[in-house]
Image 1 (cartoon, helix red, strand yellow):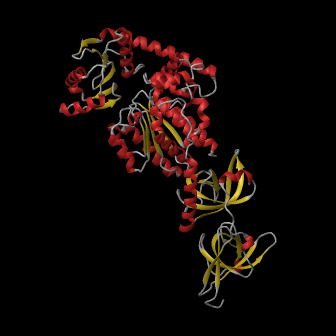
Image 2 (cartoon, helix red, strand yellow):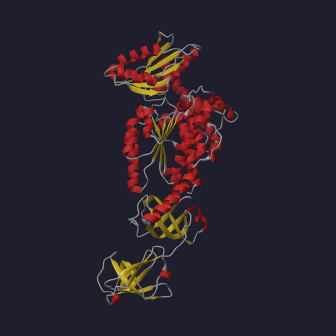
Image 3 (tube, one colour):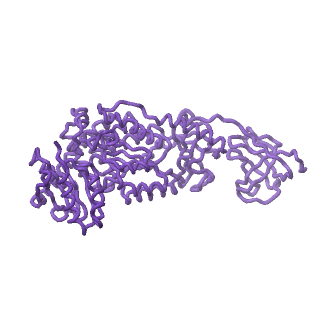
Length: 613
């Protein structure tokens, strides 16, 4: 071939097909494989041809670049090529425009070839094809690309890239899927255009409907903007296939809050086109023993998240804290999460510390709106769940009543939620559900018990099983409580404090069964309830004292447990004091050797607080 400055070598664009190839023209290509009779080459991912061995000029290896001239295009689509070695030449890209199809419209395109543009949300390598999860402004779908069994297709494409995919729409296992013919990472300008289009549309799509609350509440109305903000963050995570880790306190209120949101999120996942297993790998509900984000918990979450990121190409998760997350005790874990840029949102009703907000994208807490812990996490979680996915309401509208009685709320909202469901879930049954949740979660430990918990809360649409299970668990729980109190009550000590309150103290380490239900906090609560009934109308404080902790329950005394914790930390050198909780219900930790000093000063402080008028 003559060396000519006007020689043109064409580069076939990713969307081009055989109809865009012309006989006599020269094209850039890449070696695909070899046979006895010649070399197979690719002009792009869709167009392939053969260089007969008689038309080869050089030896090549797989994926080597090669320049070829089209000798002929046969009726059956086969392309005969010859290798050429031009000297000076210029390249020109051949393009063809195929209008992109929105993912939500793929159901109407089964069996047809389409072009889609979107962001890679996940890359999963199976023993067969590589599965790319693609997100656009309308939904989420999977695209399967096959090179050879277990080999990563399109290794240049990474999570977060904006890509154009050409392929045939198929249905596999009753799920839509694109069989990839070509996949290309869009250039900077096109990627920016598509990303802006997706982000603008997703931002609008994620905006929750501004629906009324289940009840009238001035506190909830003041919290509405922040509740809708959290709902929008969660909805956007679902639409972009971002995993969600929901951490919640492992008591009836925390479980109620989390399960309401779980029902909304999984319902929204199904509605938005996620594959059938998405709710198992994109959503994780994880109970926490303590009412704050422990280092053990964040370490476990980060371990799973980083492994899933490496092994399955998943995004790093959104962390959703419910019935915990508002206090200084959470900050060490938040600092750890910040290293990995994990976004965190909190829905809690424990007394908040302002310092935590610098770690959070959003924070719903009734104390921010003139309320207190009487607005329980279960109430907040249910209302947020309705913002996330309104059709879930009929399944979860009884959950705030369960949470209210389970957390002994005295807020006016409790009675309103109870009245809302009184016919189907009378107050006594709500109390039984709450006790069943506490009892079952004790034995579940750190497992979520997803389906069992749904049965206890009657979310599995099996009312007979729900009634039978709750009745059994309540019977077992009450028997365990009675046995614990028979052993413990004779060892409760009583003293009258300076402010007139009666203080009852129990050493739960040596006078209560350990490692069984009820645990120390629940045991202290049951002791407290008995003395409140016995001394109705009087101020009562109960301490459950362990070797390095004290659980506090109060009625009729205007305590501020978080303040007491801070003061004790300052006053007792070497006490190792920390803890917190609600204003009148909480716990304090300390080093075992300083137990007597800390407990004695704690009792003095309780006696200094005024009684309720």
